Image (tube, rainbow, N blue to C red; front, side, top):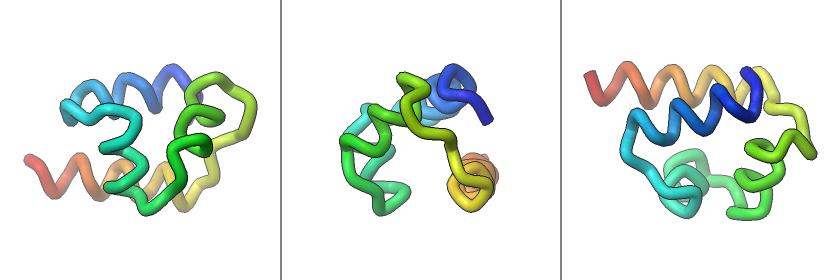
Length: 57
């Protein structure tokens, strides 16, 4: 998952960066670093994003 794909995921769920941080139990600055491409998104976070998306369907 790229930072851009992460932004799309967040947008599709209607989450702010703070909301995504809370949903994933991560710090806001970590979410910001993922979206900017400063940090790679770990596979476990990608899987958590997919699980949250499926839970909302």
